[in-house]
Length: 245
Picture 1 (cartoon, helix red, strand yellow):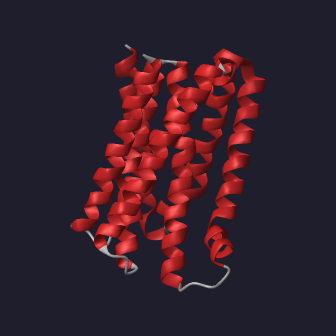
Picture 2 (cartoon, one colour):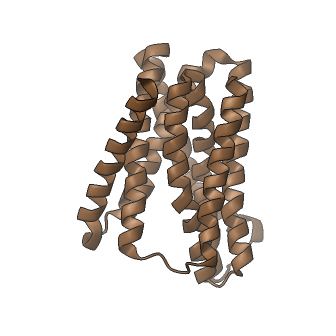
């Protein structure tokens, strides 16, 4: 049942990303207020899920394991986040136009996000089914705008519409693959579950405070973004109470 839960969760995340990426066929530009609302709402949901993962990691492995996972998750994501913008340059060995560089950075950054998010799905289900589906919901809701955030700007930078959609779907496939890989690993090494929960907690926390909220909390939209983040946190709390009780 554990593998089936993770498989279905990975499919859910992939479907959500694909749905969002498909928006490129109708939307070429995301209004700032809508962007702030959607991203902040998702950040709030992820924040509650991250706290639940912390509680689960602490109850299974103790505070030291949970804290070690937190540090490892944040550190690993920080390193990947810093290295990714330079990957294209390292492979090509030459400058590329600004538009293509932005597309490469955008796709690369979202893909990086999806690796720990996919692993977070597997780790959450290793804790409990209720926690797993709570994390799946919060990540899937984030993946809808995330798919659009990959595909729509790429189209605006001159990438052909179908190719823009393709890159959005690829980011979802990476998350699905990461979920399956995480499931296989945790089934073989179950003792790693509390550390994996802590690692995913750290990765999700990094995404929230380093990527999502700073982008959404622009001066003209900060109150909208704050309200949306609180609403997202409350929605996740309500959903968590529903599936637990």
